[in-house]
Picture 1 (cartoon, one colour):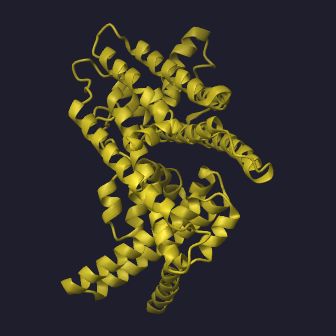
Picture 2 (picture 1 turned 90 degrees about the vertical axis):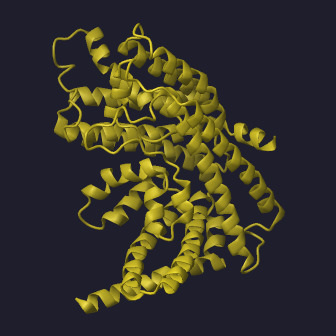
Picture 3 (picture 1 turned 180 degrees about the horizontal axis):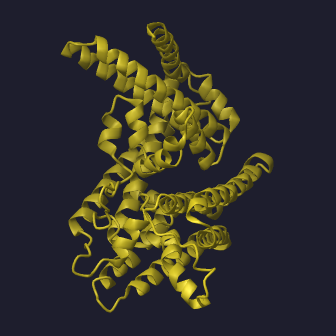
Length: 435
């Protein structure tokens, strides 16, 4: 049972697993008519507060403070101003916290506190919910809260009106992980009547449990392979390609397991169904689409399907509002949101260039490759190339030290993104000539 020990030794997995009984309890109580909507909001908020204190300790104040300030901004600003100010405040607060991590790692050369790392991860998810809510208010999808403080309402009335916002920002099933849930979906799931409120499916959760079991067994096997072989510091020439590919596979397996666990917790609490889907709004999107990620031969498809809810959030927040170089701006913002570590800056900017090259390469290939044997060969070749480029990017993003990043750049693995860069330059030149 080594896989079980390793999985639950991860702090986030431990606390997510500990939250399951409360998710089931919330789901059960929601069936009862006596469990009012206000009681549901309070239950989710209290659970989020308790989970934050348990997982983060004194660092939980770094989550509570921006949540309170964001709700205050929602109540004090006009709908057209809400998004700009909440975005600036939330990203400034998150950046300051990330700078604290940089100070610890790069200046003091000390390992950061595990609780502080959990706090930063939760803070990034809070930024998603805050900006998603502010965009909904700015676009008129959610009724603006401004005016609540300016009116002559008593403090208790204002707190009651603000309860859904506090509960949404801190509800425990999504505090430490999980797919981004819009405020409309959250409200619909909480306010849904007991007759229509979807129950968690035992078989669906069992299937997710089996998926986690399988992924963790593979994870243990790959870990042994990685530990038994050479590392990036002592690998030789083509051996470095195998080292990077297996190490990136280890990272992917870990992400898949955690995403499925987070998805299971949301389903257990009743937030993973279609109840909260508004007309014209896309339904619940799980973060792990393993079949597509491992099968695709296109880097652009991988970028859209990797951590799907975050990819859609970035598209809505940055890409759709950028007039110049939207792709580059989106990946640059993603590097900022992740913490601006050197490897992250390099990795995300490299990813942006690879996606741009992917569009041109496949458009060119679709024009000239007609026969099915050539298409099969082309798809196989580009699949392998895509997987190796993704492994290169993933290792660049995950490494913390500049020395490790330098070793990666000096290895044979750099050939694969360089091929796409050369093809990008040639195809851009060809495109300009055709025009």
